[in-house]
Length: 115
Image 1 (cartoon, rainbow, N blue to C red):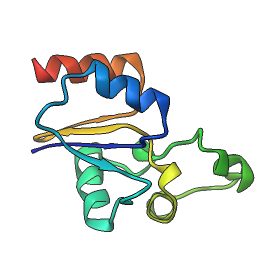
Image 2 (cartoon, rainbow, N blue to C red):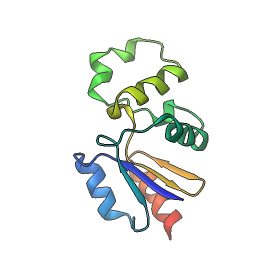
Image 3 (tube, one colour):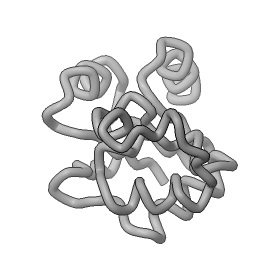
């Protein structure tokens, strides 16, 4: 299975989608089609934690003052399910491998996986 979760209004997501050979990927735009609990569970199984999937740079983190709160794995899961901006993006799934976020290291590993 090849799938990518992205935000179409995110310039970084758009740049990465152009940069990475993403033909054959099922695409899910997370604002118009939010991630459901089954999809999040699949990502969790591949990544090992909800925290790895959580976007700490989301503006709501500052609004909710999450930096100064003890956030559990269950909390991360609920935040991601309630608000699309809390999912770190893009998320690429290639068979049993998951690539989370937009760091150069992650994107390079994804490119290697796809070659």
